[in-house]
Length: 98
Image (cartoon, rainbow, N blue to C red; front, side):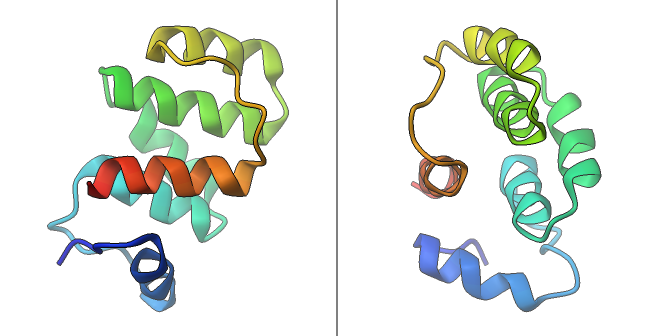
């Protein structure tokens, strides 16, 4: 079952893995929220759409690679964010679950 709110998403972080029925974008955010950047990046890298670019951008921003993140934000049609990483993650999750 897909969470309906960010708080419900956070409650799923006690699971061992994200549900198979979730879309890849939500699985990506779940792995990132669990501290598994590599798994999150692998998913984002295989998503060839604007959502994948946004996730890719966020992950490279988190990694500290501003140049690479900037490229992916442009691909996603998004400005470089001025909010915290936590706020951006919440924004991404809310966008996915809408």
